[in-house]
Image (cartoon, rainbow, N blue to C red; front, side):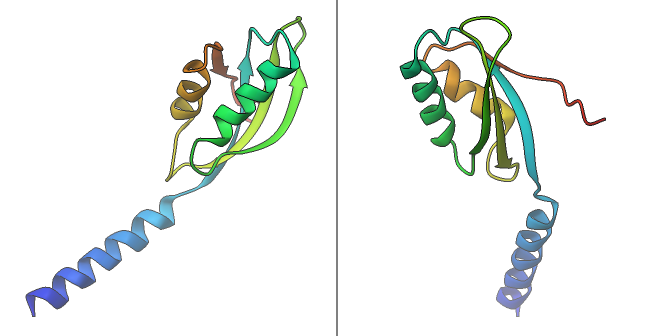
Length: 101
C-alpha cells in the first residue's frame, strides 16, 4: 500500500511541476560580434542549452552587437543558463527588458 501511495504522490508531483512549466521568449543582446563566425559561435552556444530555439537575430545599433530572440522551456533551463553558455565562449551577453508589459 505504501508503494502505491508513494507512486501516486510522485506522479502527482511530476504532473503538477509540468503544469507550471512555460515556454518563454526573451531577447538577449550580445556584443563583441566582430565577424560572421562570432554570430555562428554564439548561436551554437545558445542551441546547446536544452530546449532553446533561436527565433531571430538582428544586428544591433552599433557595430559588433546583435540581439537574439530565443524561446525556451523554463522547466528545462533559464535565461541565466543561456547567458552563461554565451559568456563561456567569450561573448558578453545580457537579457533585454521585456517590452510587452
